[in-house]
Length: 339
Image 1 (cartoon, rainbow, N blue to C red):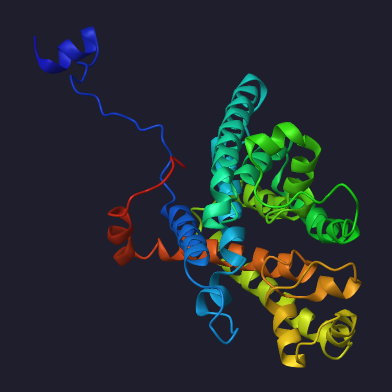
Image 2: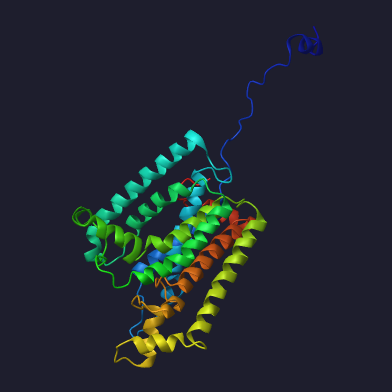
């Protein structure tokens, strides 16, 4: 019997080695690059000096101060979007499983952060892990929102968060200081919650803006060159406009003079200005919201660092598309398992 007749009678001969089909989506190296940049920035800020002997901010402070932490949390939001379905949000039982997994991860991260807090009096480093765990828990109810819904939530946090922090200045019962530990959690759980949400170094009232923005970005087609350029352009524009608004509010409109007059200090005008721009104490004055100081959590600071973080992610996505750079990135260790 010829081959053609045998094929007609018995059907095609099965291929002994059928091609395998990968169910994993292509890895977005640009997200890893942005995460790596944020980690390096946070390490530099915590290890290298913040100011010179003359009190001038170092290059590390001017470049990475505030921006690295914002980028780190924003990329974490992108990761949450990936594990919850990416562009197609998981539903039903699968979503419950994903939410449970995120909750377990949040508890483990938060617990580790509490124990690391025991070392804070020796290393004087403000740990982010307890805050990070809380961010993950607060993000779980938002996993089912569309990118537009997430953008609306992020905008509300940007507007209301700094104002709420301003209103909390001087309130009784919010005086817990330093990093939270297992002991402080048992002794004063309300104070620890207030620290993580309002008074701490990375308060959830403003840092949710970065996480939710990252969650919204993770729902987009990050493999698209157009999306990458849009992120880079929009982030850069937001960062620049925030700084321009700060200049207008502080100088022509008199905000800096008003804040300076409220300080009871014997320092010179230059020293007072340096403090306000780089290391201010949280104030109840509305003009405080115009300060661009890193980690001041003012409206201007949140808008500028949010724009910077989005721009860094967009730039990383664009750089990872350059053929010459792909081989370089592929040799680097890749943290996480983001798809």
